[in-house]
Length: 179
Image (cartoon, rainbow, N blue to C red; front, side, top):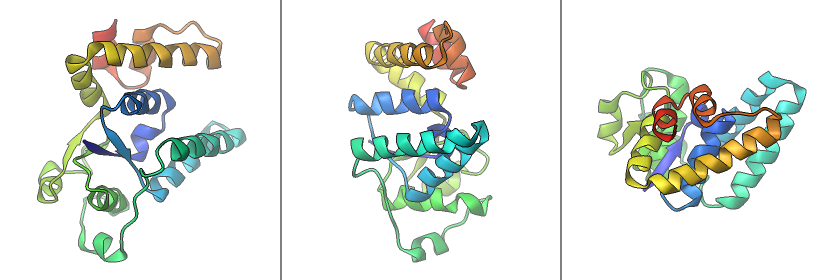
């Protein structure tokens, strides 16, 4: 299964780490575009001047790990598409160009299911998607979550608990399942 990851699920960090951790174990093939990665880098500026620098380093790492994940498309594809927010049309174009099965986003309002269905795509939020993967492969998701938790503790110096970390990352169903 190929899944186009919208910027809003790549940044914040814990959500991205969970999704890409599951992808690294072969559950799905992640897709994105150069514009999505650039939006991630720009969004990271909000945490301070070093935020963008850190994000660009992380972007280089994910590009190296998934060299075929970045998709491109001709301008004519984007020109024929419509979404309620014209600023999201590039996400739909990337999903179509990458032959994605699904767009993973928290932005449901701007990706109506009927419009996506016309292009053969589904939409799912990361919490629902990861919870579904957990139902099918609980050990795999628990292992990924344990690694993300350890990394969060290491980087922050705080004694995070699984449920609190995942709830903060807007993954409440998964948090409850793993608690």
